[in-house]
Image 1 (tube, rainbow, N blue to C red):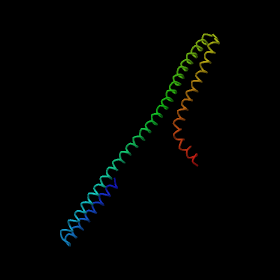
Image 2 (image 1 turned 120 degrees about the vertical axis):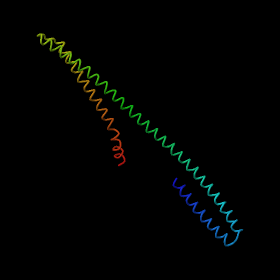
Image 3 (image 1 turned 90 degrees about the vertical axis):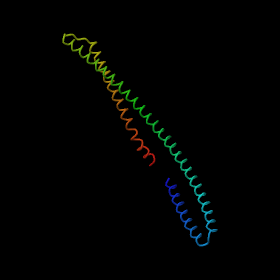
Image 4 (image 1 turned 135 degrees about the vertical axis):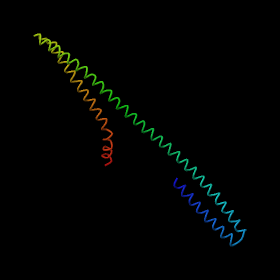
Length: 173
């Protein structure tokens, strides 16, 4: 666009010089020379206007190409962002499921502890309640470990984009 403005300025300056030269030659040599210079000036003006129109058309085509490239680039970024959102959503779903599992296990563990406390208060020793409580506690530990693993996966996913540029630098070195 700056080139077009520069060309227009140069064309205008050239036309002004041509006009001044035509007036000077016309006043010195008479009418026939001025008519010849006017014809040359008009031909030059027509040629320059045609060149200007071609430049405008070329500029419009280039602007359209730039818009198309930006559109492709934006759609590529959008697809990458959508993929990232899908991946993070899956991680969040996994973590949510692990938290639900952990909650269920904690509720079950509390119930087992309540039953054991009641049995102890009554003076009974029931080995199956102890076994059940231990199994529930083991399940709670597994659920806790799975929830922590899901949280670590989420942290790793958040850190991977930050680590990628560093890996590229190491490979390029």
